[in-house]
Image (tube, rainbow, N blue to C red):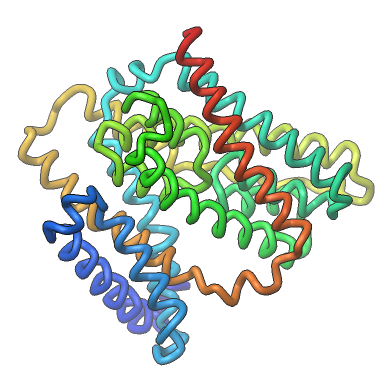
Length: 342
C-alpha cells in the first residue's frame, strides 16, 4: 500500500517530486511564449515528466515510485471528478444525441475493426488483439486493465497493449492541437470537442489536448470522453458473458470493474448545475483541479520511458497504428456525419 506505515515517507517524497515538476509546468505555462501558443500546463507537465523518465529517473530511489503511481492513477481520477465543477447538465445536453451516438459508434466500430484485423489479418494472439482494441476504443490503459480482469490473461499481454496505447495516445495528444491550429481540421470548436473526446485514447490525453485548443473544446471533449468511459461497463458485461460462454476452462466468476470516477464526475456536474456554490469558490476549485491534473499528467510522463516500447510486438504495434489512423480519419467522418444529421 502506498501510504502504509512502511511506504508512507517514500510515497510522500515521490508526490513532492511530481508536485515540483507540476509547479514548474504551471510556471512555464504562464510565460508569454507558451501563452501565445496556447499550451496548457498539462501538456508541459507530461513533456517534463517524459524528460525525467528518459534521463535522470534512475538517480532517484525506486521506493519513491509509489508517489508517482498515486499521482498517475488516484490523483488523475480525483482531477476528473473535480472537473465536473466546470460542467453543467445544460452543457452535457448541448453535446446532444450526436455526442452519444458518435461515442457509441466509435467504441463499437473500433473494437470490431481492431479484433477483426488483429486476429484475421495480422494473425495476432486473440487476447492481445482484444486488449489493444479495447484500449483504443474506450479509455486507454484503464480499459486494457479492466479487460484483463475479464480475460484473466498473462500480464505481458496487457503490458504490450498498454505500451501501444500510451505511445499512440500520447502522440495524438500533441498532434491534435497542432493540426487544429494549422486549420487542417474543418470543425468548429464545439464539434472539435466531440472529435477530441470521441477519438483520443486516455482521459488525461483528452484533457491535455482539449485544454491546448480552448476551454470550450476541453469541456465538450471531457463530456464525450466520459460517455466513452461509461460505455466500459456494458462492454465488460458483454465481454464477460462471451468469454464465460465460449472460452473453454474459463467458467469461473469474472470480477466486474466499474469506472466509478466517471459516475462521480456526472454527480459533481449535476451538483454544479444547481449553482449552490458561489463563482469565487468554483474558481478556486478549478485552480486546484488544474494543478491536480497537471500533477497527474506529469506523473504519466514520468511513466513513459522509451525503453518500455522495446519489447512491444511488431504486430501489436501495427494493429495499434491502424487503429490510430482509423480514429483520426474514421472518427472525423463519424463526428462530422453525426453533427450534420443530428
